[in-house]
Amino acid sequence: MHGSVTVSESNRPLLTGIPCSFAEIVEEIVRSSGLSRDITEYRVWMEALQLGWNVSNDVKRFGVTPHLFDECIQELYREGDGFIFETLVYWARPSRQKWAVHALERIILHARERGVDPSQLRVLILGDGAGNDSLFMARNGLNVDFFEIPVSKTHDFAVKRFRDRGFLDQQIHVLNSYEECLSGHYDVVISFEVLEHLPEPCAAISDFYAMLKFDGIALVTEAFAYLVGAVPTHLESNRKYSGRTPSLFLKNGMVLRWYSHDPLFKPMEFVKRRRIGLEDFVSLVTDESVRRAWVSGRIRNAKKAARSVVRGA
Image (cartoon, rainbow, N blue to C red; front, side, top):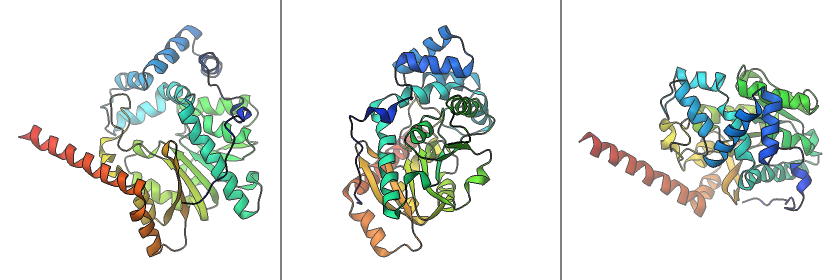
């Protein structure tokens, strides 16, 4: 796969201004949400102890059936605040921060290949939750468009953070309709752990093609296979896509050019091509990591089908 540049692990200013400690996360939520400090400390602590604790409580509150997309889960996305806690606490993990660092490296390389400064690239970040990835990219000199579910508590929380830091309408521009994303003028689209929440992820992948310029890149992570109690908003209907993400993008005109090995596939980089050739299909088939993920996905789905048959019998 294509080479990369490296941001030094010791270059801590990359993370300046992003809350990563317990005290910083609590302070951030108290300042931008209006929740009391006692309640916030408890909820942050429980999220740190048990991934998904806050969203799981939203699931109960809004009567959501885990892993099923319906009107209840849509209300959860609009009215719940669990994802504020989940995305902030999860982002504090060094393994999660690597996703953003890897993406920044790839964006810098993409700009270098085009002979422009990274700040000249048009970058769209989809489903950024509380906004940490947008803040990270802006603090590292990029200009980004942010799209999250409008008229939701998570969206409003992120926008307040951008405003308080002086980034709103400067280095971070908030899009209020999904149609604005489909302009075909983005150099980079970033989407971390979004596809597994969507009722039609293949349609979303097709939309990535519509968002990007030719030779633009999509930096993507997904968790189609991760269906456990801690993540009740990951959809069971998407299990069948486990291990198939590179081929799904290829079918939509975007070629897997690079992926992280640490963590594996977090993220993957797809480039929009004018033409897909036989060599692009061969590249996927001969890539050991991609092939292993595809086989593992097929095995998981076969086991799931077998268990369903046994239960039915």
